[in-house]
Amino acid sequence: GGQWTYGSRITYSFMPDGTSIGGTPSALFQTLNAKYPTATWQGQIEQAASLWENVTGVNLALVSDNGAAEGTSGDQQDDPRFGDIRIGAIPLPAGTLAETFAPPPINGGTVAGDILFNSTVNWQIGSNYDLMTVAAHEFGHALGLGESTVSNTVMYGTYSGINEALASDDIAGIQSLYGTRQYDAFNSNGQRNDFYTTATNITAYLTSNAQIAIPRVDNTTTSDVEWYRVTVPSSTTGAMSVTVQSSNLSSLAPKLMVYNSSLGLVNSASASNTFGATITTKTAVTAGQSYYIRVQAAGGPGAVGGYGLLVNFGNQTQSAIAPPNTVVAAQPSQGTGAVTNAKLAPGSSPTNTAKVAPGSRPTNTRTDGLLGGLLGTVGGLLGAVGGLVGGLLGLTWTTVGDLSGWAVAYTTGSSSGSGPNAVVRASNPAPSVAVAGTSTPVLGANPLAMGALEGMLAPGSSNSPTTSSSGPGKTSHPISI
Image 1: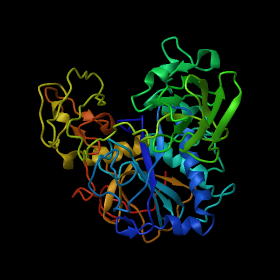
Image 2 (image 1 turned 45 degrees about the horizontal axis):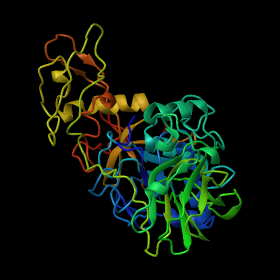
Image 3 (image 1 turned 180 degrees about the horizontal axis):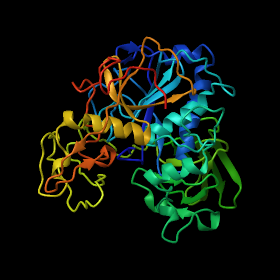
């Protein structure tokens, strides 16, 4: 139902307590620290993220969060103040475990992908309601998956017990969005550095200050092992510092081993209980000596992910590997979208794609093709959007206080009663939309396939749902999927 522009690095962060979520302060730390040490519950959520990184072409990196209000204006991806996916907690309706705002382009602002846990739930680790199970489900939504109807999956629509392993349906779904994980440049085009005899010689990467920095390498499978070889330069200070960095890059828990030319182990480091780390060894060396460097997962979760390799023979401080540039500016209405897969009435056959000028809103826009009339007005298509998104993926236009966007909830299967932050959802019947050049209306044009409409309603939009529980197409009730 959505997809981040750059899967090479999708960040996430934990909202500090007090962060405004539609006017209600987040209580994530207060809620979970009452049950477990911070590192313990955060580790459960981080492990949930790593499940998805293990099977598809994304890197999920934990970053800091400055506590800016959720949905504040800013970059859609790689805003420096917080993660692309922000995690918080507020009271939600009874029967609701968590709520996730859909990723771009369905939501185009900073609210995209954000996860809200229900702070009134008695969260557990290893029993119901299991934190990691719910977190894994929510990360699936944050990355773009809808609900699954297959009962043994992480993405099944309602909580049905502890489930901390992705099923084939989950994997097929996420790979349909981000593909399979690809090997790095040292393991492509007939090259493999998975054994010391085929180790990548990185001596040529030495700079004038006796340093090596290699970004964008990847531990691609859970059993991946990568070997590098380096010869100590004459400019050495007598020490070789080797660093493997996955922090700020991915969820990989790395392990590093350094061998001499006779394959004798001389140094090692490991970060087995982390999801993204920086580990370093320092070894006394002599110019002309050769060493092997071996990088792999530390074992257990966090077995896959991108990293950077640093080697320093000099006396200057070496900078960390910079993350890839994944900045995407806010796109509250997907101004440069295209209509590509609209569902037409039987017998219709679209032959053109409607384009919208950058920065424009898709209101009363016409094109020269068959789909010209599909864009219509935002107000006129709100009902179609709400009804079809909800029907197709479980997404509904959702309001929490003064915060609005497309979201999906994860429930216990029973949703009676409502709390002070009951989420208001609007779902109107899908109207017929006239198509230019035909006498046949389009029935239920699919807004998720219509780029010009995806994410068109920004937080605070005047088209947000009302709280009325009566009248055509208006509802106010606890979330259930």
